[in-house]
Amino acid sequence: MKFIEFTVHTTTEGSELIADIFWNYTNYGVTVCDVADIIALQRDKSTYWDYMDEELADRAKLPPDVLVKCFLPLDIADENIRSIEQELSLLQERSAGFVSLGTLETSRREIEGDDWIDVWKKHFRPLHIGERVVICPEWIPYEAKKGEVVVKLDSNMAFGTGEHETTAMCLELLQEYLHAGDTLIDVGCGSGILGIAAVLLGAKFAYLTDIDYVAVQSALHNAEKNGVAGAVKVALSDLLENAEICGEVMTANITADILCRLSESIPKNLKEHGTLILSGIIASKLQQVIDAYEGIGLKKISERKRGEWYALVFRKD
Image 1 (tube, rainbow, N blue to C red):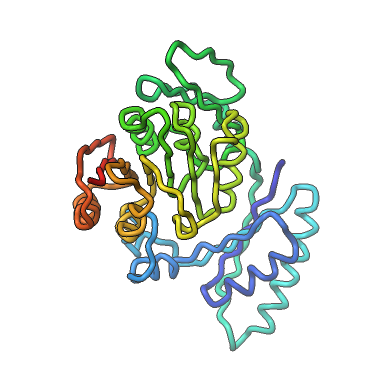
Image 2: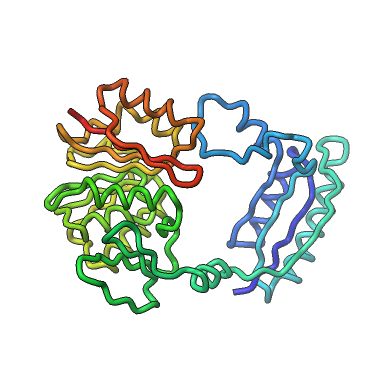
């Protein structure tokens, strides 16, 4: 489906007013790109964020304007843009002397809404990870060789294809440390790829959690597609606060700051002598994660590096 991406240049003060106008004309999304949000992220010490591109720390390279964008279906875009521009003119008149709206310069471009699916289908091929796991798109026929397990991925999957170094390392480590009959717990499951692979490798059950509703639906969908839905439970949950289940193996492929914050919570659901696999860790955070988990009594037994990323394995003795 084709869309027109319509952009208005404004200020921080004007961005919400313009976003409110946009929402009257689209159900397909409104975004606000504001340098003030980057500055707030840099200063905020109470919230844990994913890693930020170092170039964003150089404020001189950041755009001075706030960009507010909306996405309009192609067939109604012209009519809606005329209405939006009329409302912008009216807003400018009413705001004069009270709120600075900036230039209100506009631009538009045509985009393909489902472009990412086509790109993903074009370039993704079966991935062999470790000795046994093959990640395969559903539209490509693949006959498993002896000993291999095949995880089928749908084209509309939102998270985790196995291509990223952190996911690949977790899959490799599962093949080393997971035993038949184990229960796996995955915190921050995304697409469910680790839990699904674990069941196909012989785990009797996989308990998966994520705080993102889309991720939970993706994991449920993929578990069904791979025929393991009966052995997989997916919970929309912040960690395992409401879960009494314990596992022989736990995985958490998130970010170092979050791993550190959750260092006392995650191992509570790990059985004695169980294995904890952590990934999503960059070099500058590596020792911080090691200290956090060794500090609560876990023993580091393995460390792996791929590209700029690290994975760690701990044992609960």
